[in-house]
Amino acid sequence: MSPTDATTSALGRALAALNGVILGKDREVRLALTCLIARGHLLLEDVPGVGKTTLAQALARVLGLGYRRIQFTSDLLPADVIGVSVYERDSGRFSFHPGPVFAELVLADEINRATPKAQSALLEAMEERQVTADGITHPLPDPFFVVATQNPSHQLGTYALPESELDRFLMRLSLGFPPPVLERELLTGIDRRELIGSLRPELDARAVLGAQASARAVHVAPALLDYVQALLAATRAAPGGLSPRAGQGLIRAARAWALLHGRTAVLPEDVQAVFVAVASHRLAAADGSEDAEARATALLRGVAVA
Image: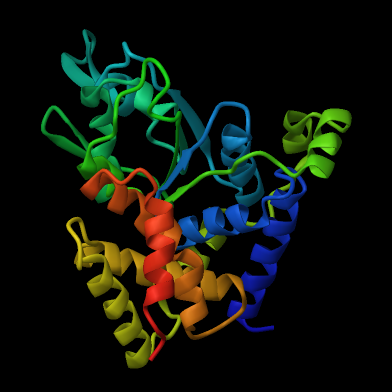
């Protein structure tokens, strides 16, 4: 078995374990895992109680990653996220005490309930994979994956995420309600938290880094790049098109999706599978679209594969 085959096999086992906890959401679970393999960050937007936090916890457990949760509230301070320097009398020096952002998988729970100042504490961490405190830069763990949850913007006590922060998230997903037959299983079966406790790691941090490296090696043909550029151009026909950085993210996500399905080259179907999750929140932030997912889907349908 080649290293790529071994990686694909391990990822397949991880997917099976995740689907045993998050019922009826195979596509969303695959996209979440794709986001991590593509070295992106994930935004889960939905009403409370549909499994957003459970998904983050299950991902950390199955992938063998260190996990920390930050509960975003209106009184959260940036130091509560990145850490603080404390003066130590014995040494006569300030010592940096890392905050909860120093973990391989960080759950930023209800991120839009914190003020913009607290939200901004994540910007450098998500983009540069480091934080700066008192002029000193501290590297974050590798891999580093942020899963942020947010409540719908019409709910009380929420602050809209600025465009600069939304752009740090490679994907935005909504889990939605489960189908009735699976909801019945949730109502009568084992509590999801108990199931998470019984999960065993299918990978570890080193294996996750290997999967990310394998994804970067997935081939992208010139004709596929032509298709991606056509999609980007289509989004720019109206105000608020996708940036070149968003295009780079789309390629990374398509590579990771292809790897997850055991392919060594990206197909147009891989781009189509991840496009809405990558594009919708960027389109919504740029033009205030009420249904950016519908717009992204329409754009996808309107661009032919060469």
